[in-house]
Length: 89
Image 1 (cartoon, rainbow, N blue to C red):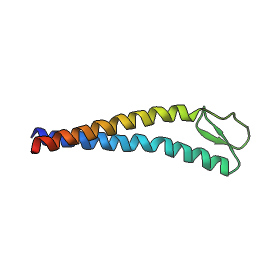
Image 2: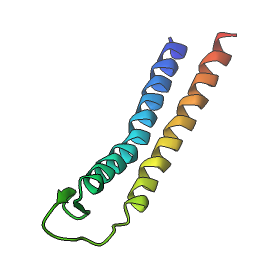
Image 3: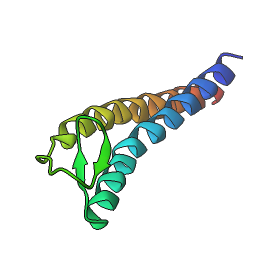
Image 4: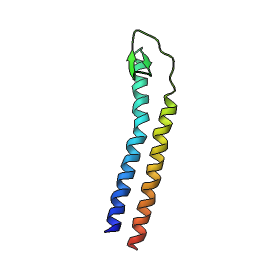
């Protein structure tokens, strides 16, 4: 039963890692789409603005937080997968 719980926890952490890793990619695509359409991305309000120009934002620093948590989730998930497989053998 403990090995089953470890597998569930591992799957949850791995899925969380995937979700967190995709957030910066989605945000970057939103910014890129805005710029491709001739707009200026408003980083404070997270929207495309066609009337005003906005300074480039530091979205990379926010993305780094998502990616750090994604890495921690992946590492935790892989650790739990290994722990569950070692209990089976």
